[in-house]
Length: 133
Image (cartoon, rainbow, N blue to C red; front, side):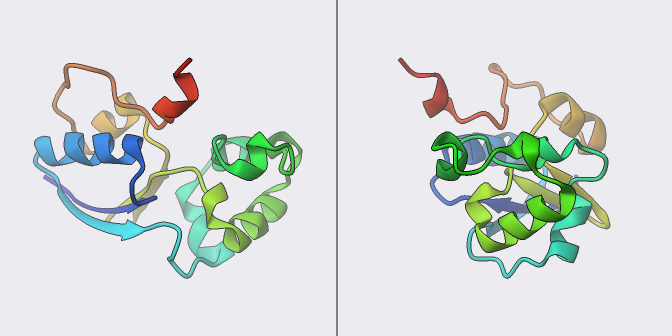
């Protein structure tokens, strides 16, 4: 069982499913609002480790969908500055266990990291609203 600091967008369907799976797996959650946290570039950077910069950005963010932000064209410094200015751009959830930090919810990676029960359906960080007709 791990104590997970879980940064979410309140009301996000995917974040709700992720929290349910984590709790069902025996983890204790300290849930925080990703959008109101006082982020700095130094505080955000460790969550992304060696992920490609384009994956740091929430593909469902209105700025991305409208074409005002192109994740593929951002440098690491530009992405961090943009996310600090507009936290909706941050890929979610952000999770911290001890000194280890992760961004996004790859079920297999989370299972390998802290352990998960196998759910009936796959849990991801993709917004289900993006896949409805």
